[in-house]
Amino acid sequence: MSLVEQVMGEVNQVMGMIDEQQLKDAEGVIQKDKRIFVLGAGRSGLMAKGFAMRLMHIGYTVYAIGETITPSIQAGDVLVAVSGSGKTSSILELTEKAKNDGVKVVAVTSHSDSPLGKLGDVTIVVPGATKAGDGVKSIQLLSTLFDQSVHITLDVLCLMLSRRDHVSNDTAKATHSNLE
Image 1 (cartoon, rainbow, N blue to C red):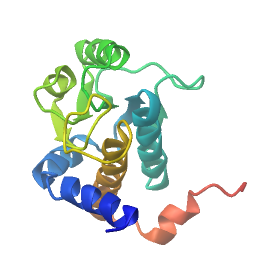
Image 2: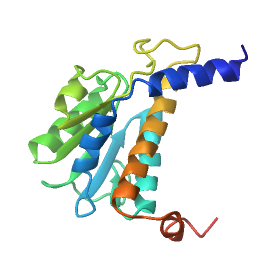
Image 3: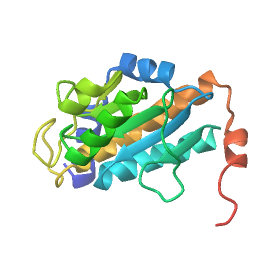
Image 4: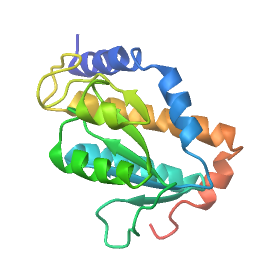
């Protein structure tokens, strides 16, 4: 079996374990009349920013925590926080503060019973291997399988949102960067 086949097998295994009801629950929280904020550290943060970009393409007001142009988060906003272990202290601290300020939290983690998973108003479990070696075992380094699977999972969520909101590919394309 080639490395490509092994990696695809791992991704398919994790994606087969995604609970679509959790995505539907997140779909219920993420609404166009809400500001959406994303949060993650390292590669999890990159996956969160990719999600933010796709949300922008389908018409959402979305910000990445930590960017210089990100406004303050307020009660009624939605925070999508991503951490494979669900234990990353910087992510937990900011998520707890946001939740205490009345923000709805969508947690994306490999374990529902992790500290981040417990903070979520909605928790999406993506059981891919993390840097701690938990989750579905992988031949890939560190949290690669978690990151790959989060990317696909959040793209599926965006597809669900775009269908719910009747956003066509042409509509999304109109918001795509034109300075490339």
